[in-house]
Image 1 (cartoon, one colour):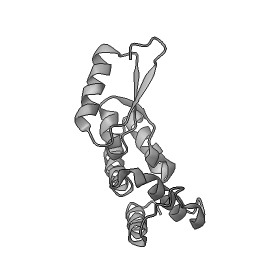
Image 2 (cartoon, rainbow, N blue to C red; image 1 turned 180 degrees about the vertical axis):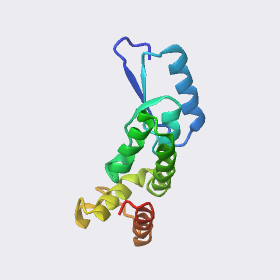
Image 3 (tube, helix red, strand yellow; image 1 turned 60 degrees about the vertical axis):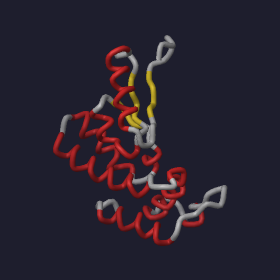
Image 4 (cartoon, rainbow, N blue to C red; image 1 turned 60 degrees about the horizontal axis):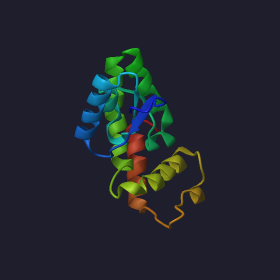
Length: 149
């Protein structure tokens, strides 16, 4: 963060809220000119409250509107709408960023299939990994419950 050209840092710990808190505190106290960009899919709302000024998250590739709305509510100060949507985005992240965590890409592809953005034959992984039909149904049920399908 001491490099003069640095203007931002993206933090994505995957599951360490304490690491995020520690880094956010250091940036706030020692490098206030550095912007903190959250990459924390499993805790987007919280990390905005802890100093994130933007989000660069893998989850943002599908169901984008509610995630954009979440950011807009935060930055416009609409606390009630932010908290409601933060809970929904967390619910979505819990089914897309589940173990094995590195399979989130295939889950995101299936979300895009469910949204009608890409055809089913495009939801494949170059390494041959796949998710079960039960997991696809879980993604679909979650997206419907949230009102995103």
